[in-house]
Amino acid sequence: SLSKNVSYNVALIVPDITNPFFARIVREITTFLNTKGYGTLLVDSDNSYKNEKSALQNLISRGVDGVLLVPSNEIFSENQTEVTKLLQNLAKPLVLLNAYTTRKVSYVNFDNVKGAEMATQELINYGHRQIAFIRGENNFVNALERYEGYENVLKKNQITLNQNLVFRGDYSMESGYRLAPDILKNRQITAIVSSNDLMLFGVIKWAKEHQIPIFKRLSMIGFDNTPYTEILEVPLTTIDQDTEKMATDASELLLKMIQTKQKIVKKIIIDPILIRRQSVWKR
Ligand code: RIB
Image (cartoon, rainbow, N blue to C red; front, side, top):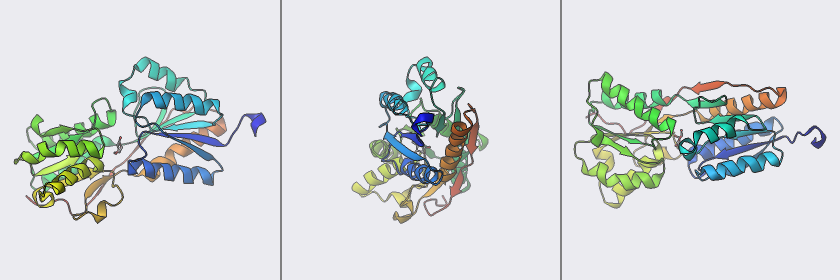
């Protein structure tokens, strides 16, 4: 009730609602909180720190009981002292999702290094050695970690890291589309690990438009187990990140903080799963 300053509403901020990965998280959090008697106020920050910051301030002044924040990439390249102040001094309990932090803030994240290691090793097991890697932006720890996983496995298999095989996108489909010509003109490449499915979809789109039979030519593994990957001409092998677990763990943790009025700093890491479909061929 208002007198006790409790609204039974929780704020949820995501960076890109058009990415099905985040859409799924939204659905799972909303459903879960509903069963616990809490409503969800949703904001799409459009990957902007400015939007994130004003959403946080707005929602808190409107009386949400706590905040679930899936941070933008941008937050990690802003003035970090300011970000620390913002996150650590929030008037309400906060849990981050899909991000790491060394700050005194709780988070739930996936083991990104392990996910990329699994994908890269799978391709090597199928005889590939010239494996392209499509990475996300540098400032984003998850992106760095996926790249680190790729590097680790190459090293373990005595394959020299070739920077010409590393392509930099920003997790959007457009960025994959933009990188496609460069990836496809390099005839050495026989396989691709992409830091998410969307960027791979961009590559596939470009190849289709240019009548390049990409599925016959390249083995591919993505990240996210995005819905509809199964109905592609060749169903995509992908690293599944258990979004349901992420949503539930983060919501439970937040409710615990809200209900016990305690600040809890807990770090939860979820194991990725390799979903084998048909996009990996023997070389
Ligand atoms: O930031 C976008 C990416 O991070 C998503 O596609 C998903 O892989 C998440 O972990």
